[in-house]
Image (cartoon, rainbow over all chains, first blue to last red; front, side, top):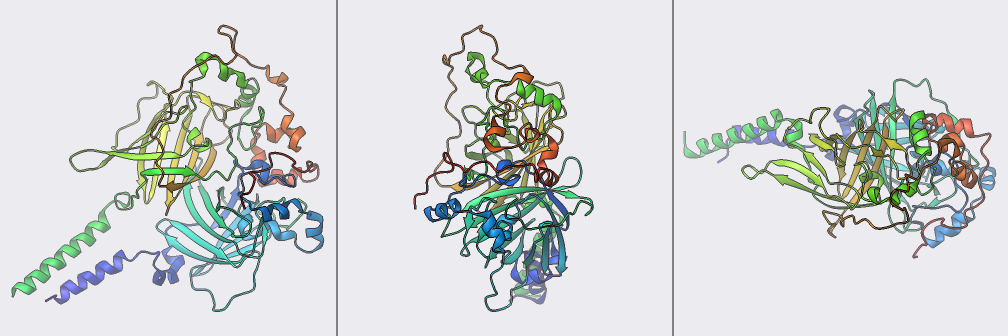
Length: 235
Length: 302
């Protein structure tokens, strides 16, 4: 027979072993955050410079495992037409946003929602730890993001995006794309922090393989360099 | 008190002890993850091996580094005595190859003494000592592989490498000094491994150079060593001198500007060109290059 002390000890152990990643604990995501992602982060482009800092030539899709259908789309890229059609934000959708050079402001919108604002393109991502409302919401550039803590990392799965561009030069992702991201932090040798965001984009329509990248950011002491600029299809 | 009650008390005591030990143990001891295996590169970002002789984009070089880089000729690699010189350890993230990782344990308790990332033909193995040994004194011998110690920060293995020989940040000549240090973090997410590398060099870098790359665990085993490096005649006559350019006369300095309209200061790795402000600075003077017509990407299979 198991006595009350045994049961109490077992309950205590279960409570302590329960990981913050467990769904029931995500309701207190802000309180249980194992890492602090809030603040201003600036991207610094030490990889893929020619694909991120300038708009690459039309038809250049090097290193992106596109399908033939994607090839047709990217070769027909017309930034002026995108701009005129009110589609200037296609390269600022969730699957491309974190690789656009700029600054990101991360705040807690409430106890269960991390908010990521970008100054480039003036976009807002909401990373929700709580369940999303029932029903399928309208597709948006930033889609619907479900977040959870995994040990000392943030995992985010984004769906329900409008079709957009992985690169400024029209390398496409479709509305069927999903993206899984992992946010990890590390100290910067000069003080402050580094953030690396590993992103895995899966798209049955335009990608033959998952497209995996990692973007690096540095934490800034304040928002003095925050410089909002609207989306631009032509630059 | 009956035997059941006694048994219950013993169980309770053991559970409480386990919980107590779990709470007081260093987080690193609890949170380690398995890294052993063959990890193939998911190379969807540029492999900065220097396909163009003067392309230092995305590097935070200082002036001294630029002058040395511009004096470099890749024909040096054809010299018999330099063919097997190899690359510094950061080539494991910059290079195109996968990572074969294993651990060595001490026999009594099975504690991990070291993690090793296997060598390639042109890179020495990276041995990450986990047993608390100190780094050698500053003036100890520098080797191609350097000296590396590691520790766990939660689920992340953190490795620090010192005592590397002087070499190159990229194959096209940007240099690193023998004072270079490297801090590497291994973040595992399921079957993905993201490696974040921070390279510091007080001689040639204007600020730390940060790279990251993601690998995927694969069932096909990678070799733990590369093929042996064998020298051969590659067109450079012994005693013919060291191929080089005078820095101001490097004939390739404008190749990337001509090809892709990338401004010279970015081609030459000025640190300000890494930040968003530079993109705004360029906006009004950048002219889009003509459409890509060849080597635009790999041909799709479906």
